[in-house]
Amino acid sequence: MLRNMEAEQQRRAQESERHKEAEAKRMNLKVQQLAKEQRQCRKALQQAYCELNRRIAEHKCERRHVGKAELTLQAIQDAEAQVDRLRQEAQKAEETLATARLELREQTQEGGRGSRGQAQGRARSGVGPCGRPHPYVPTGEEEAPGMKCQVTELHDVLMKDVGDRIRADGRWPLIIDPSGQAATFLRYQDTNYLDTVNPEHMRPERIRLALLGALRYGKPLVFDLREVDLFPVVQQQLEAVQLGLAQELLSCRLLEQDRYLSLLRPSDGPEYSPTQFQEARLGQFRLFFVTKVRWPTAEQLQVLLPVQVQLSSGL
Image 1 (cartoon, rainbow, N blue to C red):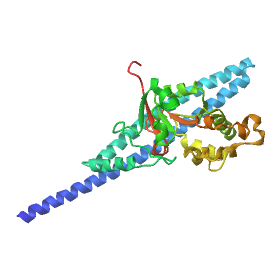
Image 2 (cartoon, rainbow, N blue to C red; image 1 turned 60 degrees about the vertical axis):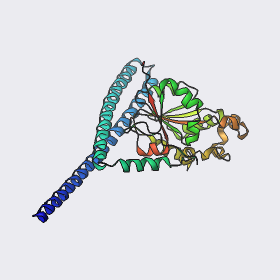
Image 3 (cartoon, helix red, strand yellow; image 1 turned 90 degrees about the vertical axis):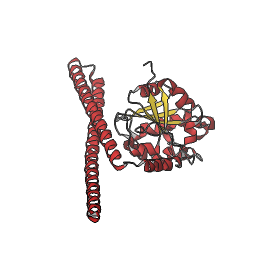
Image 4 (tube, rainbow, N blue to C red; image 1 turned 45 degrees about the vertical axis):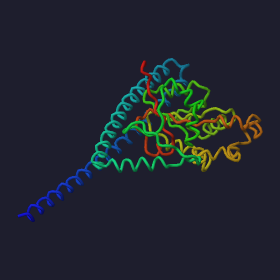
């Protein structure tokens, strides 16, 4: 009788384990499908932004012709409506995916505080791409690791790097701000700002000159990713400027041993002659990525330093 009871308990345990494995597999497939749908939403939103910018460019060309200007203005309004609709769809897809990922983690980490602690321990021992350690600073279980700051603290955190936290980390910041206030702040500072959904801003020559200008005059270069996952596109366009540039820029190696001089072209003029690049200004160069996506991709969180922007309590 005792053997029968033990056998029944073992059978039930095995059945429970099989059920958990099947449920985890089902959730994993669901997450994969939702991730695919999210990528499709972001791609559609990116295309809508490109169409909107194209319509705006057409309208600028046709403003002198009253009849055509009215048509192009209506086309802009239609394109804006499409962007708004797709933005809402992308946001909903992102939230649905985040919820599904949370459910999957809860299933696979039942009683697994140890495994979560081990993962955090590995993150703590990581080394930034510039050869300096980047500490793991938890900002909440479901938030990206990194730093937190208020909107009102952006100047001190980003421009002045008070406390040398960015320098010590060794990665360039990824400013995460769904409200969009950080992007507005950076756009109106003394920065070389590139809107990644604007095809004109993503031309290799425009990127090259923006990067050179930021190095020459000691100012930040800003890539505004909006609410679209355009980080791979930025890397691709940097490679179009010069092979290997994306990794050299992200790893800070571009600033070593005058490597940045390889970006110079004979047509750049005397203001960009090698003697015009001063060490003090090069030391003031910054590279910022800003996104409205609440949960950026794992690649971005690994390569860049997440900076979570919080709205002030009074806002």
